[in-house]
Length: 459
Image (cartoon, rainbow, N blue to C red):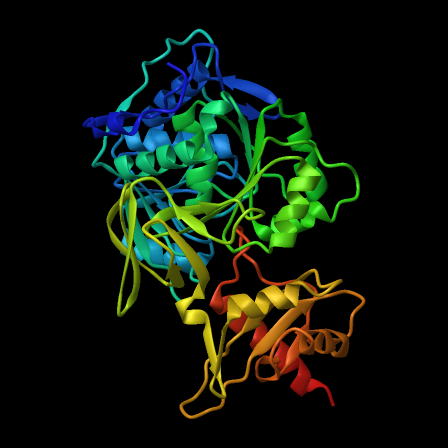
């Protein structure tokens, strides 16, 4: 029956791939055409029969519908989906060494991969029998998701099918998705990322929603695809994408829900988004190891509220989360101030704390002030590796066409303590953000090396 599943249903040994869809429901929109539940079930069964017998699959399908069919077909064959933070040859080479049985599923015939690759085939036909909805053991490992590498090397985190479904159900319950049957969900984040997997795929599949198969990149394309979707509709995005959308001058399509994650939003940006899209905006806080942990409606409160079933505790090391969909206790690498059993304030990453001349702040706070400067389109503070005994010197990279470095520095002097002013500050054309808008430390280190080399080369 349609509607969000009760959490008690997840105590069953086997959990269905999809639920809460009516017989005539739309499961996805692809090329602005609806895809039925029956078509989806046929596609999953057919692809599962075509996949090779391996233990691991690297699902690189860019089309979200293709990704979902591949993800679920792999589940039927007891294969584990490897979901790394990027697809560079170096990282794929690491995966091949660590998981020698891995092969690749791709829907891009023109892209070479250093792995045995299965191209997503033409599937389905209306004359084929419709399989029943498959059920998967809750304890079956469905995926290994890797951290983003923003503070170092990517780290693997196994996810069971039961844990992923419990996470989706918790999100459905928290957001009150029962009020939006059949809602169309468009994501600007890749499904290979934990946030994208939870909020643009699993929430839809377990809540009877309709996912948008594409991943439009340019703001005008995102807005056009949103406008073409039927109401109710939801946008799953990130702060960097949201900022670009709000820079568009035409009227924005009205939404029914906005979800944002990967970095805390400034309250002003959240308020502008709610006004322009005429919809409530909720932020999601989480990490790869635990998945989504808490939500907040940013225009109403600075506090985060833990998802149903989760427990937070603190010790001398920091904050831990357990319970609910978190299958084993996870340490949160953030500075958190508990305000009760389920509510807390977030003060930034533990690794991003800055202590200069006895004064303390966080890179998150500095980034907030930098990006609040008028005409700054994007910016980030960076703490380079320091030799023992060296004095800490912060660096900043800023995208601000029309501004000089002196103007940016003068604006920063009005906002932050002089001890934290960047030395140096580089004006750049763009920041090396990955698909989810994050800035891996390795990419920033490389950018610093390049910019420093340019400065030294100037006579």
